Image (cartoon, rainbow, N blue to C red; front, side, top):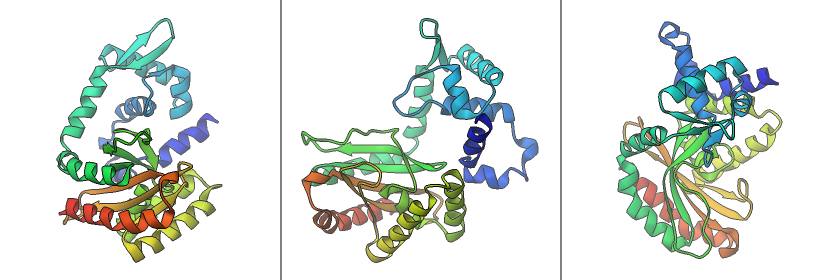
Length: 271
């Protein structure tokens, strides 16, 4: 089982790393990569994990995980909690995260427009960036509605099963999209037929309307639309979504009213 988990982890490595590994193996610092994998084991909303949980999530050996958690604690990135026999993320990690987000000026630039759309829709609007086989929210706005969607900056959602992820896929060059889809297929072979059908429908929707849709595919009773954002040189690829509770509106009304508005927002941010 540990070997299988390790393989699954490797399948999700960044595209640049997977493609350039052979050419730059001498520059590849394996110990650093493993240390970062330990930190990545902490998922959104989690601040405390034990070595056993980290072993299961990374596929690394118990001894390796023990060495890295001890070292990360010594450098102040983790704090050991004796009463729980677990490790907790420290503010040093948060500082790194906020430093990275502060460099993404588009998030701050986009926030006013995103908030207006969220208020108009009575839901939420998120800006996302790809990380392996997921999209991570780097900016998020929600309406003041009494019913809101419980997500925020740092939320991680799957690329293949969400409107924001599918929109990101649609804007990729063919070779990049095919490569990423091959990774998704390898990571979820049993679910692949269903995923493939969803991707095909997303392609049809994107070509016809410029955005992708998700009606409860990821979160039950949530309607979502997504559109890609790309800089002129296509060096920066992001995506934006708009989500509302399903009871608030019909599928047709939601897509007809807010689909064009989301596409317009994505186009403005691309510029």
